Length: 270
Image 1 (tube, rainbow, N blue to C red):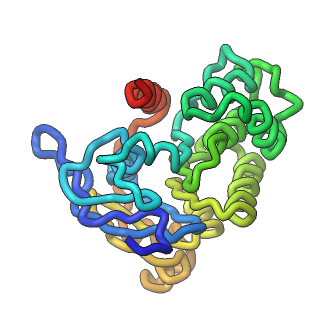
Image 2: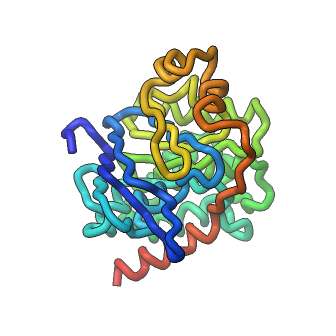
């Protein structure tokens, strides 16, 4: 792994029962402080890859490192180095915004003496401090996303994973979310690894893009170079040219992953 890489993946493979190869011998690196878009149709292997990177799945073969840590051998330490916002909502609607943040702080081992200040700092950063005592079920979709981003950053991770962070949001809210993400990247040097089906987001925000389909990476470069390589005029057209026009089945993610993460954290802290 290069010293300038936050994430390094080499010959990573994941095979499930029945012989299904979800991820097939992929390799890539994500430079520190960069915004990296991991793109692909539904069922291409994106979510499986993220689950391996975030310790929710164990690879069949190959290697991966996060900030120099092997998540298959040092899972607890690796989890400390990243935050994650899942594709589907994973907040507890029956708790207040502050209570959601406080619970997450305990889960990630944030020192109790530092917790109030960290919660206030992050909630102010996403402009939700004035709603700290409101139940999450009263929040709009955009407010929930901002709170999830604040929660994912509460333990000061070096990497933030975002699995389709703006799905279902209106254009104004999507723009608002990306303003925060790019601000975090620029001001804090945060490495951002995200998936999206909105190709214009990747074209505007990503420094590098990797396209995966049928478990294999079929293109990896800057958005401009991928557009040039495919002789198209934008990343969406380039993506369709690379992956075809057939409709794919939806991958799953969300609350189940958050529950799994919580269980693994509790097991690791015993």
